[in-house]
Length: 170
Image 1 (spheres, one colour):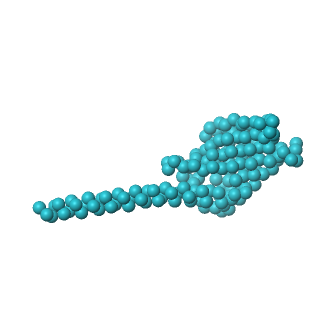
Image 2: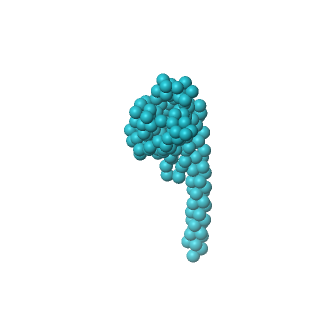
Image 3: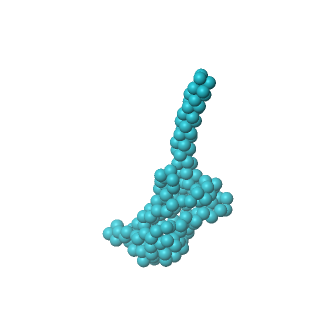
């Protein structure tokens, strides 16, 4: 979803300066949770970026000019892998109804992440992620509730007909 060069890491290395974030959207019908998996190609990611804290957020600028801020509600510590040369920050945040509506209105043109130690901007390589993923989830929910509504309507109609017949056959 997000991948780019880190301005801070570029000062120290031309080859180990990439930051990438994969998104996974999950839903339990009551809320949408966005799981973020940040991977920094530096074994000391904490030194440069710090933590993901309650003050951290991802700002997504949409093609319609609107900016959607996705705020983290919990603190998350990084996991550094010095033998392999990277650091991972796994975290999640809950999307509000307003954020869901906004993310369906336009493609993502820019992104930035407010780490505990700095703000950085990154490129977006899957600009229609939320449009495609949210529409899948919302269609599943619609189908389920539409089916339940049809089932309820049929039962209500049958009960009404039985009661109607009972009343007028006295």
